[in-house]
Amino acid sequence: MIRIDRLRYRYRGASSPALDGVSLDIGCGGVHGLLGPNGAGKTTLISLLAGLLAPQEGGISIGGEPLAAWRAARPTAIALVPQDYAFYPMLTVAENLAFFAGAQGLSRRERQAGCAEAMAFACLDAVAGRRAGELSGGLRRRLNLAIGLTGAPEVLLLDEPTVGVDPQSRRFLLDAVKRFAAAGRTVLYTSHYMEEVEAVCSHVAIIDHGKVLAAGPLAEIRRGGAAALNLTLARPLPETLAAAWRARFPAMETADNAVEFPCFAADALAPLFAELAAAGLAVEHMAYGAPDLEQVFMQITRHSARD
Image (cartoon, rainbow, N blue to C red; front, top):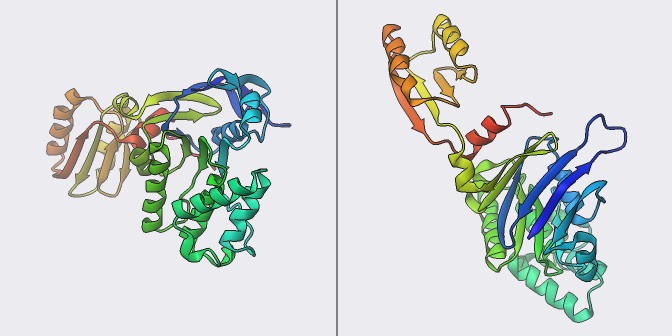
């Protein structure tokens, strides 16, 4: 169990803390999603878990042992795969793996085994002799992942691991994440792609403004969201009716012929359709029911825009 207890962190000169009393339990094994708008505190939390930053208040423990002591006894047990490419473009794939394995202080046998296993896991054998800077975006992401695996980590921190890749490469990376976790290891996965999180994560935590807004099994988080109504009309909503609906449903959004109600009670359906009929507006398509993760995320974070 990774236990994050009342963690606070404020960057020098910042007007507000990046993390403001974050408490979170992450079970051992499986893939755990960490979600939040830009600036929510995700990268700060990952940096603290990776040991790149030290907590200012609160603490982190793994298996009941303080993180610093746990890491000291297991120097390669936590690995961070950052969003940015973390390799040397002029070195080959094999040379990059060997370099980063050596930087972890592994023995010669451990380095050889770690590089071979990482190379095979990421299916990079065919490009082992190519310079990293010559690789496609998908292969670069796979090399980023392979470097993180050279020390055989127990906990893998993945920060936006599929940014800028094609659909085939994204599928490969998601399958690789699931294979890694299936061996009993723990993955903390951050992504802005909600469909990815739903595909690989068993648990999610949503943070914003440095606070945890929701955390738990993915199915429970989705059930906690309000039902949504989506309508496609034969023509755009008249402004008079749109104004009346916005007064009753402040979260309503419109785009061309589409109308979305992120939170909608079933007993309001009949009056709504009566008003549409009175306005002579036909409904071409309707969807109503439990929200997906993206809709829940937008409800919880209140559609906050971030730079």
